[in-house]
Length: 294
Image 1: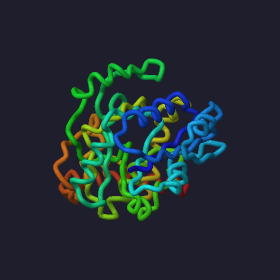
Image 2 (image 1 turned 180 degrees about the vertical axis):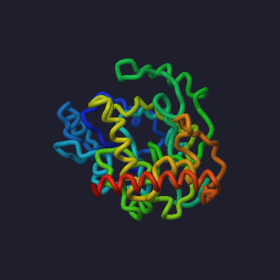
Image 3 (image 1 turned 135 degrees about the vertical axis):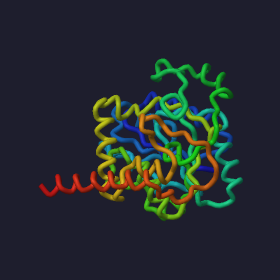
Image 4 (image 1 turned 135 degrees about the horizontal axis):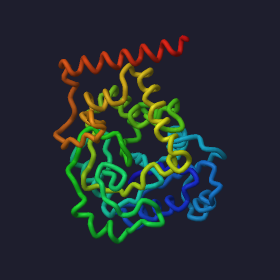
């Protein structure tokens, strides 16, 4: 059904949780393709022993490059972009299939809903040692939420033709940070207007484990770096794009905007607030260019 791209970087215990959840909680057969970065924790041996399709690099090449390399092995019509610190809840793929059939064409980007460290807060454990699968499964019906607008997050589902048309993930954002928003912008410029998060398609997210466990300050730095790359590339910053184009992103209090889905997106309304924030983007870009020239 789907070709699941799953980069991992020395996250063996989370990788086990992720792949086992896919095995027992999927309604359809999927191709799992794992890109192993470094693999010194035994993850490479694990992937080989389990017989998964895989690609390998002897150092961490980051999310964008790992996705692009592993995507070359994809044999199915649809590509699912995944993290290795997900637990896929029962019925996750059935919700995607229902939505694909409802839409009736391939011009879309769909995502699931991240529970835990994501769009919906629920504490079933912050690490693999404290993960309470039973508690999570017993509360699934109360966790499910509404479909939401403007998603850029994983797990993200895209038709392979669309993936190829936009050139996959942009590698200038490696190792990570801003790359998912850049992918959404490339889709927008290819006239994709359905960016829909599915409220009944649930994954438990332990929360950027790879980035945070290496260096907590690195997580913030990569986000800032990614925003600068995005600004230079597209002339606007990430939050402007997500706010005005996707009706998503963060509000002025840095809280996630979780707008109920109400159909395909339209071009942004160019009101006073739009132009005010656009001027801020242009000033930020001017500042970055001045710093570079000096």
